[in-house]
Length: 486
View (spheres, rainbow, N blue to C red):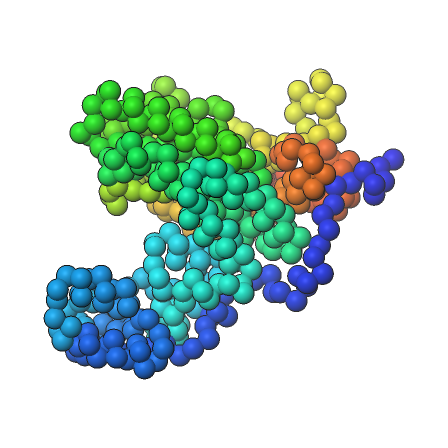
């Protein structure tokens, strides 16, 4: 019999019980917003900032839109450019600012803030009224902001050795968040923000001195692109080069990218062993070559591993872009919308990897006591979500957001979407807890779990999760016969 001593468990922090599992950006607001007018001068706006002790002013633009003028804008766009500070703010703030709904989860708000490189973001209610503004400092006391100190240290690393030293602390941060009982999707999102910072700083330290940053766009692939990494997740990547680069220059870039791969390995990260990395020609092409490849994959998806590449690129997220227009995944989604045959084959491929507790290989080799959470449960679910997003013309990359986007569509009912979302969260939570328990014991975190080391409740949850995914696959298979081509 299996006893408690055989099970892998994670000790919980006593100080975590008072922190709510879900917080919204509205919980971060502490002061009333600084609101100005489009007809006020920049000088008056600066005086208003000083008076209110803030470094921004929100400018209503009409139609529920808002502009934003910050202290950094005044210094960089006006004073440094030699413009008159007595010009109307409306001439400077000439486009709507990015805003957040007050109900946005704090971890999503932090992601938007960092991804967009913004200092502050206005927060609005349902009617479009500004409730306040959030910046990096507002996340210090929030669980979602637990990554901020480490991320800042990573971004300021002076050399490769310092970068690797900071990056090797990622497992400790993940373990701490698990002990605090933070939601699995929040932990994964926070982890991805730090991984992004490590890769970007690696590019700055290793690649930029020898490769013009304006000549390529770095694209994150796989689980980190979807913002779903766990301990030991591969760092998958691709690169989109400017068409002006010649073959010799491309080879040079790839050799430098390979050096970055080694740096990341030295940082304790797993660089994809199958070659899904920007240092390989298959995943580093010129823009025109990528566009030709997209057309080929859609036109002949069964040739040259087109379906595999399609799934990988659909998850792609530009991490550092030389050109904001480089979004190969979005172009692939657009191409798939016009080709029913390619969509059908993509669905068949997505459903081919069946969710199951035991495979025939397990039976023949006597390995029925282990279960690969990723291969036999999470990957089939991720595949369903990816295809469902394509089916409803959604460009979402995160599995949870893809399920939400496709909920209620002909191929994915609201009930199925809600169930799969819950199943995804359950599996990721079990996966993270198991890996952190392995980490605590000095073992290498893995996706292959020994069922006897799970608690009886977790074993039951895994079995139920697999049944739910398999059921959704069967229903989608039945529906596909008359829905996909419509």
